[in-house]
Amino acid sequence: DTEVTQTPKHLVMGMTNKKSLKCEQHMGHRAMYWYKQKAKKPPELMFVYSYEKLSINESVPSRFSPECPNSSLLNLHLHALQPEDSALYLCASSPWTENTEAFFGQGTRLTVV
Amino acid sequence: AQSVTQLGSHVSVSEGALVLLRCNYSSSVPPYLFWYVQYPNQGLQLLLKYTTGATLVKGINGFEAEFKKSETSFHLTKPSAHMSDAAEYFCAVRSNTGNQFYFGTGTSLTVIP
Image (cartoon, rainbow over all chains, first blue to last red; front, side, top):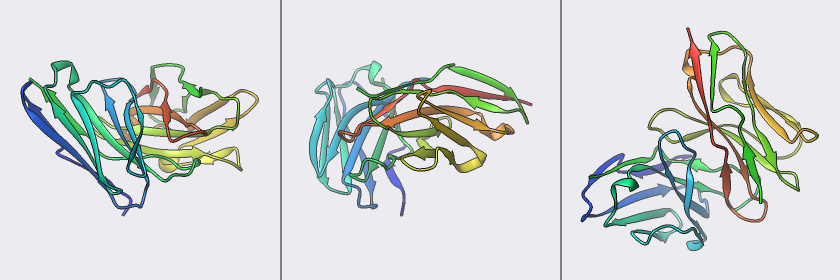
């Protein structure tokens, strides 16, 4: 299994809603990532988890809250989002070795109304 | 800090023509370099990677890239473009001190019939 699975594929939410994005991988990777990607732009790193601990927390608004329940799962909790948060949210994972690539999920297309 | 620069945000080629997408890296130590392709509303798919060893790297779908240390470049090529190659292409470098991936700004490839 070389897949990173993200659910849901599409999500429309209001600014007062609370929702969660889910990501799962069974490749034994110990690093997992959340990226935000706007149209025609490269992915922007939001969070990195390594060995289930948040190792890098960029200056991401607190309305985004990551959670890593175990080494195979990564969630992104969303609360009180703004329309400008509409984007493609990508999850990725990689082994904890330097010469390996990141494996990406298909993404969740989020629209905030 | 490591980074990659992609020259040309848009490249158009005729079907059957050579594809050349440019990427230059900034690194004080040998980097780990990657090319990813992204189709609309999908995740990133690895085309090829350079870690160590042979400087000419072959990837999927007929793509290849050559690592040139003297030029700090890792350009992506394909001898004959196909309509299905139309997509967004990202060059990326992995940090050798952590688990971050840094992406270039991307090149949108259009293939003209």
